[in-house]
Image (cartoon, rainbow, N blue to C red; front, side, top):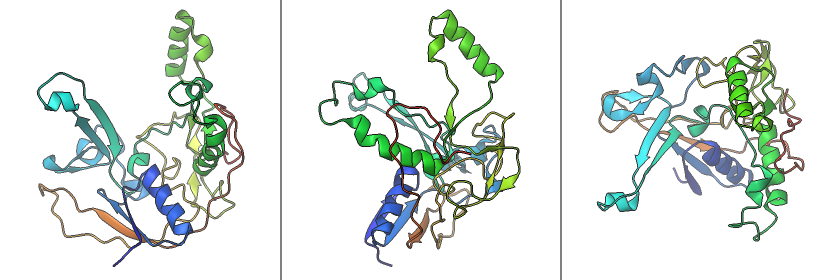
Length: 269
């Protein structure tokens, strides 16, 4: 098979790139190291290491990748800190493990002298943040938990109580029942409402409640997964998933947002 473009990785970046290219008429193939997960196949807890962590040398093919990238100086025998990178493995990439929190930069970010003179980044990025928020169904988590109260108490002792706020999350808050697509006029997948009494996290998630790059698509990208025969003990890891894209329906166009704002998007329910 031949394609105009091959995209490596199916996370937020890869999935959106593939979608936009397909909308422009290109044929696109997306390569992903991990497999496609059905709603009921995710580990119920991160302590189920073989199903949660991606460590092919141990025969573990979960969704969480953890890689230590050493600095150039350290590789050459000198001193220097590295960076620990957390990413995802599976169709959806990092969106499978991003803990559902979706913040916009505060105004101070746009005023950083490294880039503030290039353009008005606040105005430049606002419509894109708004469209992402609408697509992922960002809403403010409505419940204050014991952990939230402890954080607030510590912040207040430090004189920073005014900085504490509830998190914007990419989850459909409801009563636990499955409802028709609430974000794209019925064109998207059904969603299970996250009970407001249960704080969003990566484990113990109601199937269909959290927004990932596959789940947030208004029309799931038609796919033809192909796999090589594999062994779960193979030293080279699981075979990558590959699928070809044809033109899906376009997401709802975004409206102009406010820079550094925290108001729920109109797509939130």
